[in-house]
Length: 180
Image (cartoon, rainbow, N blue to C red; front, top):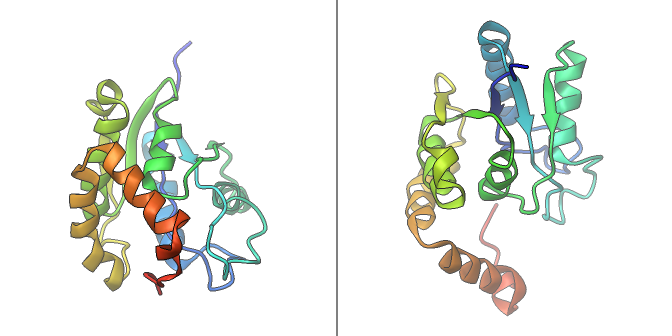
């Protein structure tokens, strides 16, 4: 039996309270919907719950919210996974466990970083991944500014990334507000 190619659609943003998908995730989803309808395949949504306290009204995992958005548009070729981390690395880790990971749909700048991380997570499966950029980009101006820094961070060994994550989230340093 021939399996359809699977495309990761990384989540990006939620509304201020977390109750709905944000405009950038919707823009990516609209493009991904058209792409997969035209080329065939399965969209993979893997984002979990936002750890941000102001997203206190998030009704389900972001992956499930995305799948619901697709279902409202009569598109059922979606696979829902739940990443153990609420970031690109977590989504990629789940995606690369699949039998037929074919590509990643996202902003061009984001795709470069995603491919670096995929290579660290699963070097063999990352080699054949197709990178599918959303035309016109889908990053906020702030995210576009941070992306080169995130790309350099992604180049670090995973143990260094894990150490930095621990310091930023599990120590008193976490009280420093780094995001909007």
